[in-house]
Length: 152
Image (tube, rainbow, N blue to C red; front, side):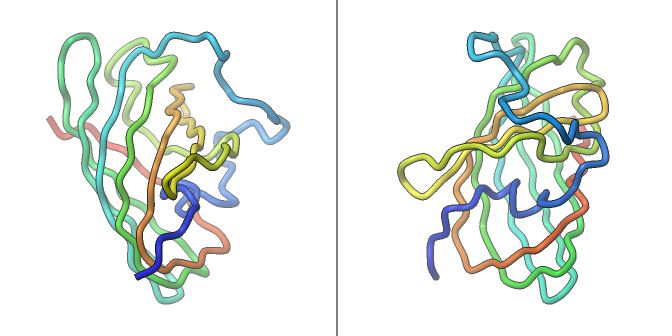
């Protein structure tokens, strides 16, 4: 297997703008913004034309831990990958707003160790700054985004 640099979420979310501001060119949160929570998740993806991405993780919010699942479809996609990511959550005013369809709103920079950073935003305005690593061989031209649901 070969280690690739693209963020796991970017692979899933390329060319998807259902809730994103297409004119946005900088990070969707201020550099000095304090996160409302944090996430840690793992997952994977497989594809041969039409693909599927899945995963699960933990959201830490207001001194509590909540589990969530991730799922989504991608198109014009080939390959397989394992995903491991952490992130900070911004603009989360109530727990229910975490659930939703997330899309990429700003590409991030590559980080050391075979990973990268991406900003994801849902229809409630919640932003997740994701630092992810992807291991595997994967080629993706477009996707529909990823759905996140609280499970516990």
